[in-house]
Length: 383
Ligand code: SF4
Picture 1 (cartoon, protein in one colour):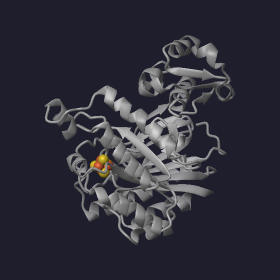
Picture 2 (spheres, rainbow, N blue to C red; picture 1 turned 90 degrees about the vertical axis):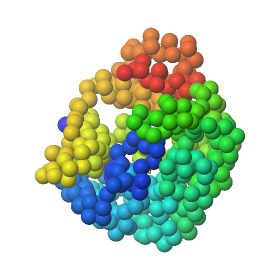
Picture 3 (cartoon, rainbow, N blue to C red; picture 1 turned 120 degrees about the vertical axis):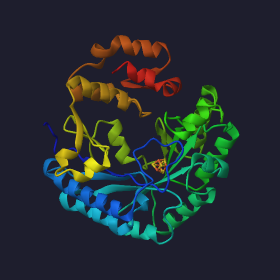
Picture 4 (cartoon, rainbow, N blue to C red; picture 1 turned 45 degrees about the vertical axis):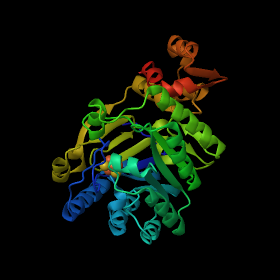
């Protein structure tokens, strides 16, 4: 295994419990759980954190931790503290480590935010999704429209100065005016960071069934793209830089953890179904809770692995890097891989530039506005 010990490590920790299953959700999360099963999971997770540190902790300093889910904010602060302590005890920490907690409105109140601060959490990602009471109800979210504002207010009182809001657009029957009203409501709450995703109806979810069976109307691709580009304009006017396909931030507040995913950084995924990329190897844990809980050692939790070839790394570097609006620097590409980009991809890249999907400016290659809409077609050329 080749590793670069100076390369900082990100840690993702998956907490797969929710109060109820949202109607569009196909994430690895469960609404049926008991206090005992959560306790058993947390204990197993702590065992995995410790166990995997022998292979992945030594010599690497951790500069980001991300508690995602599921709804990790359902866990009491003392349980999250135990989980984070296991990380702090086994992995050297960077002084300015970014520790993010996904916190759903309606699950955290008042003084609990102070407890989260006290255990080292310094960034919140709040699942607002919409500010329409009807839409929240339709989506199966547990919170009401005002709960997001309460969450932000309580978090600010506790001293959180790095808050992200997640929003969805392109919801069934949604109009452009409704989406922009939602976006303005979010901006007025003053978060440092905003993620905005177009609803993708996933097969097997109730929302997908509604659309397929004509119970609700899916919005058109043209309207969806209009909502997306108008959002980018609106966010720019409000001082948010659009730095990745679905993310915008005030200066200095881009998600450092997520940037690792888009720049081939090392990260270790811990918990049920979590994925890792470390030392040129991708691997993922089992998604079966019984198997996860009964595993005698972390290695038994691993369900699959793939050792990246040099060409895998090159492909991933390009198509993940192009997700960032700054694009990829072809000089850096040459330095990292010892290959000339144009020797490898001239034909594909010229074609994409001709079709208006990529822009080549100096040594930078990046998606155009049309390329942002058709990014998957661009990425396919480099796989
Ligand atoms: S809160 Fe998130 S993870 Fe949980 S069911 Fe809803 S969308 Fe899925």
